[in-house]
Image 1 (tube, rainbow, N blue to C red):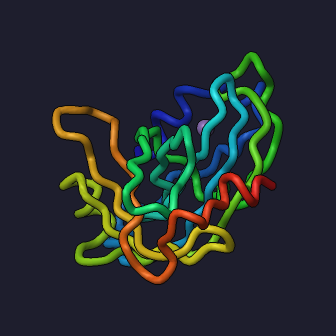
Image 2: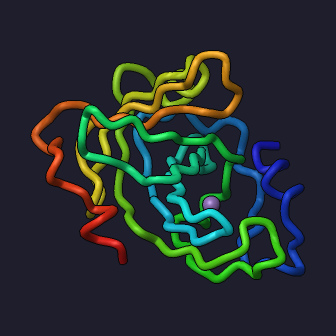
Image 3: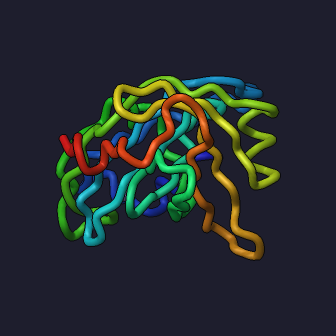
Length: 174
Ligand code: MN
């Protein structure tokens, strides 16, 4: 039950969020898929990076959002897998509910997983990927912090898209 934690945290009668069927267990391994980044103005504003992996969206809450500067290390907290319907989801979640607050689609596109499959990368604590979004592009890595349960770092890898001047979090907020 990949979405068990997702369902457990939400009351279907009280949130506009999708409650979809479980994906078939046979999906995967994943070498590429869709991705979205939500800007989520919850009690603490953050960006939710969601990667399509085997029929669900593996999700990370990134408080400061992605950076194009390879020397920056952005905290990315792994959160529960979300249903694929979240690829199109925008809403105001009621304040009293889990994750309450407005959530917009801030970026979307395709993710290609490098070196190993997404499943292997998530299991070993290092996901190398190439993002082709409208705002966020190029090679990134998600690296799990040693000894932590859910804390990872989102890093920009050096490539043609990298640069200290490029900052869609600052320049493209909508
Ligand atoms: Mn969120």
